[in-house]
Length: 352
Image: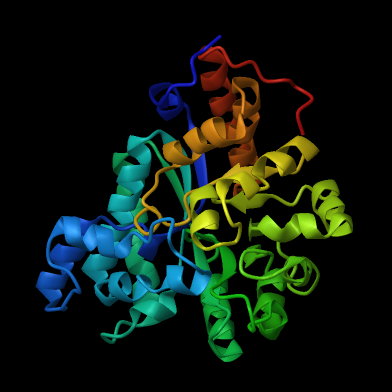
């Protein structure tokens, strides 16, 4: 029996599907960029700024959790900054054996210094391409709209996603505070996305109840659900999600910090997994949550009792849920399966 040590979990191939660019920066990079751009930061040293931006477990709500993004976005307003942040995030992920990464961000948050939306996306794609060239990692980009913005802005972002389809952008997301900002307000932008055969993921069931998940699936056709912690409150919808193999992008640390769940003990990740739901583990925001994907897997082991046999399928769930063309996905899963089996983790061939 393999020991489920941090070193062993670190060595395993992993997929990260829910990772926000502006929430996953290096603190030293924020300080460097602030100096270059003459942006005033609330704290000057790495230690002080880290403590300021990492919300900790005392965070009381999703809205409070989102406040540090004002600081990170303040320095992500130039092409060079966006390239650097994307490249460094990919490097950090590759360093912990993440083989597949989806980076999400909202271009509308990065135009305060007169960058065009297309220049914002081009910069992130440049960082992606440089990272893929230098590291053992494959990266996809997801464009986010925000629930609280004008639906016309969502439509513009959807048009960008269509324009950049097959050029590195492989999905469209709806993020931000849920309460009072229903997904159905953004139906027009998702109509465009769906009719251009682009993948969709929606933050839902994090800051609001299962009806938010219902809207995400049935009003704007979400292929995956971001978080989904409150899905268990509607058994019929839960079974629908399970039957249709709709993946949940779960972020254990973040879910406790935003109070999507009151504590680790109340988190439904193991309950969902045991039911057969396609659960995936993710960081959400590496800096804000002060976590890594290895940390999230260690939480699954230490807080929820995931066994080695269960972990291998949790890992495979991430790769199976990737927004990749089927041929690429199958090739990647075969590589992952071979690596896992070389480490003694045998995969059942009837796993769905």
